Length: 78
Image 1 (tube, rainbow, N blue to C red):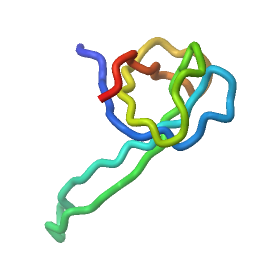
Image 2: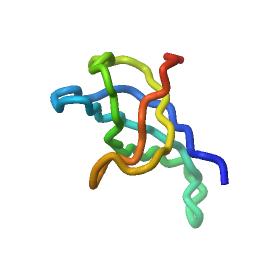
Image 3: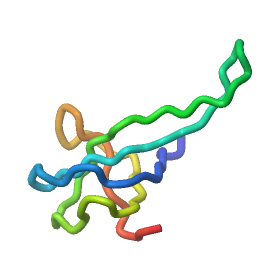
């Protein structure tokens, strides 16, 4: 199974070697057929503390680094 790749914006970089990335997705409501926006924050591993608030990043699924950290930052910015 391929690894999940998500694109989002860094909303927090306070933790050491960790950033929080907000992913926004749009989907159609099954009953009302209206387009709904939903947001979710993911913790991602950032080895060199390279990324700052407001950066656009891509994150990829990986083996767990901790209880909540199951993604790591791809080196390329989009």
